[in-house]
Length: 480
Image 1 (cartoon, rainbow, N blue to C red):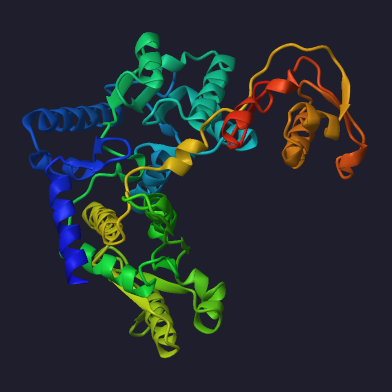
Image 2 (cartoon, one colour):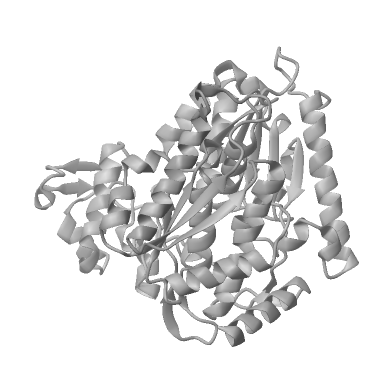
């Protein structure tokens, strides 16, 4: 592995110096510079980072200190944060909030991280009267992610219905001059902060960096999965506050390493599948299979040595604490897997602090970059995700006409996609949208649809061009 590893180290050095590390999008990759602006390759980038970080810190201090207040709340200060985003713009903040929030935080935080209307309604309903004292942070690097836009529009509607002015409580985090940035500027939102072109959403958490452990970790992944992702990565943090670490890593690792082509254009279908929850909860879930079932995985244990803050220890019985049991579960599971030739990696931190959590994030970010070099792929783009954002239809007028699903498919010139047409019709009918469907959804052949003002010839317009169906925008509904 020495030649591959030396090549990976060289690639990391060039990346840190500002080389184009994401060739598909002709971008630098500089999330490492956020941890220490002095590492940035030039003074302009350094001042950009420092100015932004200073602005974020001042804004946070002013919100917590009550200098920045909601305009109409009787409480006189912000009490809640509602974060609207998806993917890296949600998983990172969720993990950090879960891992590091104190027992009584100055502001409680909620997340809208999906375009599920019932889920959005639930989050807004939970805020209740505190909507008037809620700071809404909208996060989207591109500024045009459909799920985030939908969440924003739903929240703005809730503000209007409550007689509140959203712009006085809204914050945008996005690239400069994006649609979201321009909207926030024109409407006079409370604040705007930039996301840089050279920072991906999944690598936008700031932290301190370690080098050699990341190389060792990447080598472990390569060895355990034969360099082709032949085994899954099961992540088991033994600490409640680290519950979301596996979900965070799921996106960081799978979006970065799950690639169809390598850097020279060869089809390689690379990737590492990540899943997990927490110990010792999973002693009672899938540990049985991990020890005795299909050997298609390797385990990563996240071990936290300190059980409680100093001075809070309490013994369940003489010489034994609750944390001793947790420690015993980790070591017992680790030994049981090893005894049955199941590979595992153990990453140990002293305690859960901002520094240790930041170090873990930095460790895995760098390991992903090194592993990507070892297997010769671009870790910093996401063509599969971008494909999922394309629109494949539009709405215009056509006379009302009853049609069977077969007739709709024939007119769309895509009879092989009749199941997708059926799914669209069933969804729209269930939500009383722009059509009437007669027949039983349990018996598709019985359905006739009155499509109303919909041009079905345009329903699959982009499919005729690309033969790819990624997203349907139909009568105002976005279906993924």
